[in-house]
Image (cartoon, rainbow, N blue to C red; front, side, top):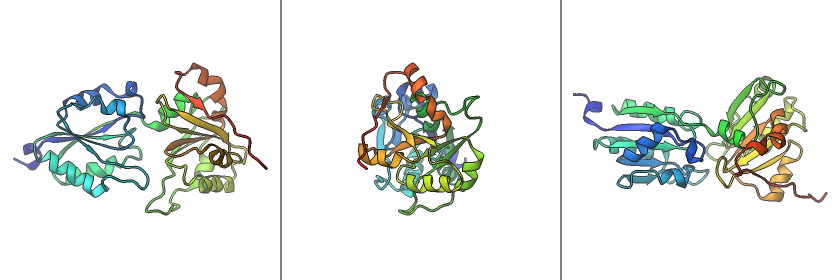
Length: 266
């Protein structure tokens, strides 16, 4: 008998963007029947409330600069728990395979001989703009979308993303974890030819009753962030589709709040 046949199983589960109604049925069933749930910081409390009350619950972090466990510890813990013949759920915000390190964890588990299955979730880059009344594509505005991470690594942003190619190749750009590096990102996109008047939306706490957004342009958004105290984590949507926000938000649930522009002294 190989090791995977004598162990439990790990499920890499996407919790979606926050609204519990967007959780998949498969994810809900797994949470209700899990022996161990290791969850990330961005999983909403309403989804954590669905976890089997008898399950061991472990907070694995991770937010910028505040990690409850480092990645290696998380992987080791998943292996240890699976080796006790447990049903282990690794619960991640959004989708595990979209900037969630799910691919890395899955490779490590397979290498350790642990049975593992992926359960996709709705990624925040799709759901959050929708709840803000921003379609990522529209026949009159955008026929292409690029999803990109803006997250700095090891305390220093390393320009591995080809922002010039993105500026020329996508009409809509969705940036995950990009608030802290936004000046750099805007600078690179502007340098590549995007107008200073390019529309941009920043959306935090997306799909939850606390959802808030800033709507501006490349030339105004940093002043708006400073004036309102807007903080990460947030999704950034860049492109002409942002202009549809005012028209389409009226059809969304009453949970989306646009932070009004604050007069900025010259």
